[in-house]
Image 1 (cartoon, rainbow, N blue to C red):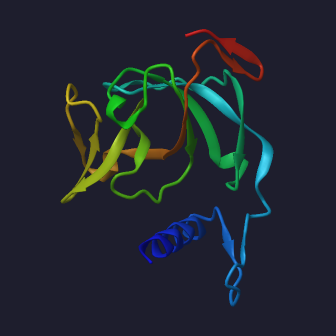
Image 2 (image 1 turned 90 degrees about the horizontal axis):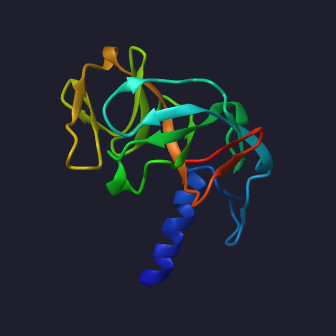
Amino acid sequence: MRAVQSAKNHLDTLVNEGRLIKEPGKARGYQLPTKIRANTLAPVVGSVPAGPFNIAVQDIEGYIPVQTSSDENALFALRVKGDSMVDAGILHGDIVLVRHQTDIHPGDIVVAMVDDEATIKEFRRAGEKIQLHPRNDGYPVISLHPENLVILGKVIEVRRYLEGVYLIGKEING
């Protein structure tokens, strides 16, 4: 019986995330969203540190194909530099797919900017402040007032290439 409830919980989560549609009144009325596009391209707009803050680079280096139910204009990708997120499985050289959104919850991994500096960190709240937590004990927690922070979006996918990264429009080695 626990397995059935567990499966129902997983289906409910997929419905809540918009990755599955439930037809009311039907026991097996689940469908994939019709607006999933297999050939959407997300721009790779440079790199962002998974480490201390650095100046954000926003030159389009190429594009990666993505399959999403999100608005394709709300997606962008970044190359990761640094190792502050290794315990979250985000490594130097990975490409992260980011969805522009301001509705962020504690525990979400975000791309955040302070002035012209960007970083990838785990989002948390601590009283009146926002905390950006690295997922590597070798880095400090960044604590800020909300007005000193801009959330660019939520990391929704991590891609790792074992050799050169082949973007549509360019090849990047390393």
